[in-house]
Image 1 (cartoon, rainbow, N blue to C red):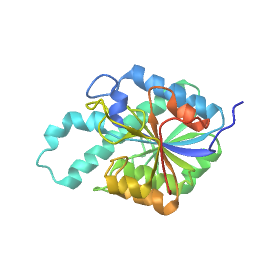
Image 2 (image 1 turned 180 degrees about the vertical axis):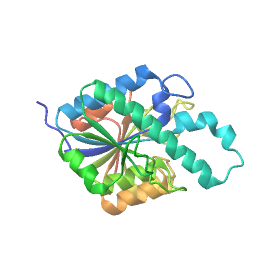
Image 3 (image 1 turned 180 degrees about the horizontal axis):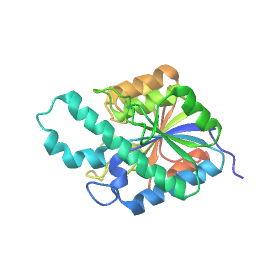
Length: 238
C-alpha cells in the first residue's frame, strides 16, 4: 500500500463542482465520480472531513434572494450545503463507506448536530465526516467554515479541490497566458489578492500553520496530493 502524506485532512469542495456541466443542481454522475475517489482514499486509511459549498443550489435561487436581508440569504445558503452534504453522504455509502453529516444548524431528523468531540470520534472510527451548514452563522463563507473545522479537528492540511489545476495569477479559463504558482506563502496570497480562499480562512490557516493545497478535483489530483505527488499549488507559512 502506498504511503499517505497525511493522516487526517479536510477537503473543501465547491457546490458548483457537483453540478457537473450544468449551471445548477446536483449531477448524479459527477457526484458519483467524486465520491468514488474520496471513498478510495478513505479505504487507504486516510481520515477525511468534508466541507461542501452550496453555490450549485443557492445560485439557482439567488434572484429570489435579491433585496433580502444578508442574514436571511446566508441561512438559505447554509441549508443548501446540507442538501449537498446529504447527496454526497448517499453516494459515499453506496460505495460502502460509512459517512456522517454533522450540521452547525440543528436538523435532527436529517443529520447530527456538529459537536467537535463527536466529529473527532467519527474520524477515529474511520467514518467520513461531512461538516454542513457552514459555521452556523451568517456573514461567514464555507471557506471560513472549512478552515475553522480543519483547525478544530486537528487536520494536517486543507485540500481545496477545484475545477482548475492550482492557483494562477489570473483566471486560466479566460486567459491563455495565465501562470500557475507551485508554491505561495499565506502573506503572498493576501498581498496579491489571489482569492485562494477568503481572507478570514487564509488568516486562520496562517495563524495555525496548516497548509492549503489547491488541486484539480476532476483529474484525480486529490489522490495524487495525498500520496505526495507534486501537483497543484501549496500555500504555506513560507
